[in-house]
Amino acid sequence: MKIIGITGGVGSGKSKVLECLEQEFGAKVYQADEIAKELQKKGQTCYREMVRYFGKEILALDGEIDRPKLAGIVFKEEEKLLRLNQMVHPAVREYLLSEIERQKEEHTAYFIIEAALLLENDYRAICDEIWYIHTSEDVRRQRLKESRGYDDRKISEIIASQLPESEFYAKCDAVVENDGDLKKPDVR
Image (cartoon, rainbow, N blue to C red):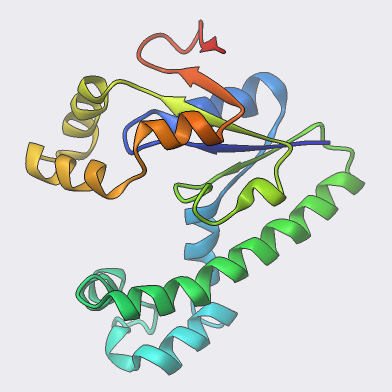
């Protein structure tokens, strides 16, 4: 089984590439953000630890974690964001390692891990290859305005908080150019 990590900046079109890999090659796709959300649901390990640390004020009326409330807390204090990441990232990694073993038993050919912080969280140790989905900033901005309704200020803040392109190029094994038609990707 080949384990491929997929990363790239916001608006680069990672979701479309994942969809293509799943549909065209039968790849099993695992998105770290979606796994993290599942592990933070009521009754899960991360949930209990988060409520214990942050308190019940992060809960919505239904008892689930209120993500905007939590974001309001952790993005004001770097120490709290660090603590949240220390709770969630190891749990996501453990889940992925378990799924890798399960998919090996199923004789899966391609296991895809998508994570915005793939390089920062050392997924190199898990992945056989890491692919960078590159898209020009102009195209990314246009996509984010159309799909998410973001304004230029918000887009600039997000882009500034992500790794520079030079790090992606230096640390990834392949680059998928995704400025245009996904039917003809340019992989180098």
